[in-house]
Length: 124
Image (tube, rainbow, N blue to C red; front, side, top):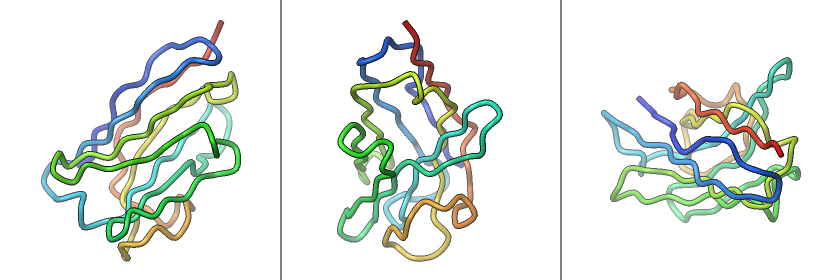
């Protein structure tokens, strides 16, 4: 099971750090992705991180503003979000990549064991 937290209400230009904590298994064995879904829109991939070498991938929309990291000892993956924009408003989810320990992109169909999500609202 994955549990996301850290969402909230923030003004444009602000920052938030999301956490994705695993229970029942070790996150360190898997590539982990972050996704988001805004009302009326499809779920989109945001970022992922490999387990072996920590390589990362970012969607163009968040590149340079978001940073994904992991602490295998804490069984947690983080998403540090900075310079937040109104368009970043969404429910954010983490999930486990199906097979492979290297991040191979953020296509939702390639992920499983989704958490319940945490709401991020960017508003002035």
